[in-house]
Image 1 (cartoon, rainbow, N blue to C red):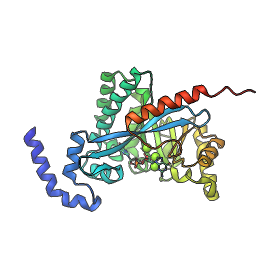
Image 2: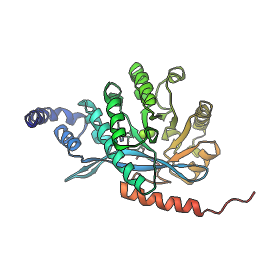
Image 3: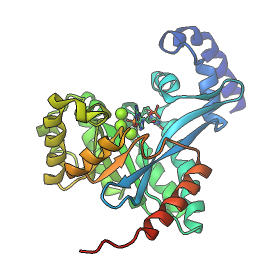
Image 4: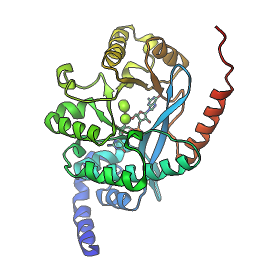
Length: 288
Ligand code: C2E
Ligand code: MG
Ligand code: MG
Ligand code: MG
């Protein structure tokens, strides 16, 4: 196996010139190594209930802790991962780290629902779901605590595979979220085939929505659509107090964004959660 790996790495360094076209920063062989050596780690961004302020979950966002270059954002290395067909490995390393974190937090009384992004490329892997389900079983994490986010664009581009994948994810008990909704080209008719549990409104319809009257009708309709389909609606990209208040006023359930908290490493996420739960429980009851 070591020989195989060396072979692969040699082949990849030859190809890396090509990969530089799509990613000026990332060398494919290095990305591969990063995946294997767990240099790609999750950051966590809280999702809160817009009504109560309570912490409801966290989205796991991949970061590359590069030994010499420091923190690298997913926009720079995920295209390489997808191009080389390693999306499954990315999903599995994120899941594995998420499960370990979930267990550690659970031991401290925090059972935090986690979301993992699924790339279009991993919609094809037929054994991925079985593998994930068995890892959950081993870790004794109930599947309902893990939600997979699939973008509207990934769905529209891979409709038959996406439908199959979605059905199997739900059968295995995972949550299913449609990400970046409102920017892709899926038709509403196509979406009725999907057993979603959550709808995430794209940040372009959330950030500074107060000053974008032409987009407000769209944002409102999406929230209403989500409500009618009995999905949890999430606004991503809340950057100001006004963004948050507008989304809450429109009836959106949950919010995520820099105004609430930036994506952060696990230890910070944990102290954020503790502080937030304390704040929430210290809020005096409203008198009606
Ligand atoms: P996404 O799933 O839509 O994630 C939300 C992105 O918006 C994240 O960027 C997050 O840091 C950023 N964000 C959060 N709040 C705000 C805000 O208030 N304002 C603004 N302007 N941005 C905000 P990030 O971490 O750079 O990730 C970018 C994309 O990379 C993600 O978009 C997702 O599509 C992809 N990605 C990240 N991690 C993974 C992963 O593990 N697997 C896969 N397949 N894709 C991933
Ligand atoms: Mg996402
Ligand atoms: Mg998103
Ligand atoms: Mg987005």
